[in-house]
Length: 194
Image (cartoon, rainbow, N blue to C red; front, side, top):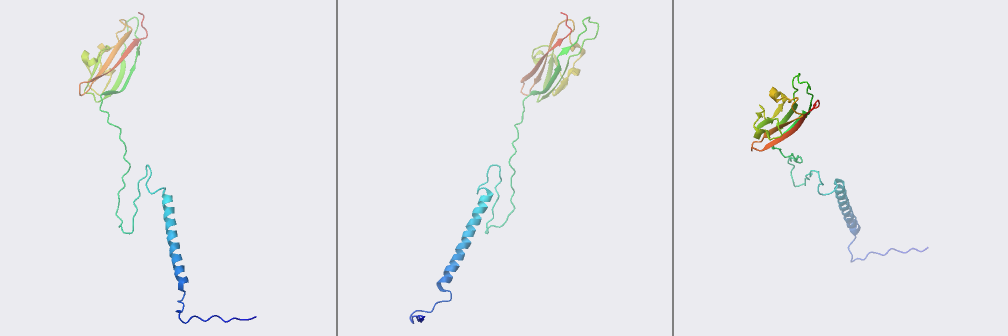
């Protein structure tokens, strides 16, 4: 085996710096790796949030950068849509038992017609034993414009037994603007012998 001597360094070249070009490459590789990890972390954060913009029904979450100071924020709740206010004059409830049983001999008392109602936004309420507008008929005004029953009637408003099989009744509400809203019903004597 023969050995060869190592070549001697050229006296005109400076001696190598400790680590030399290899050390610079190593430092640049570490910095590049850290930047790559930062980019990957940001991408995962954005994917985890769904997107950079809030979706429907989500409240945006404020982000704080290093130059901003934290300040309290008030997040507004989504607006509750209120149904429009109904200011119309109307019956809110109306019920009536449309059958009566008259005594065919006429010896017993006349039966009462029964009904009840409630209303909204009425300034007057009227009754008439016909199919006409009760306010226009001007027959009888209820004492209360927001509710009424058959107990508000006098005995002259009982069912006219042995004279006819059917009886009309109309209740008319009067609105603040003068408009009329009516409910009309027909009572029947189930014992009619006519």
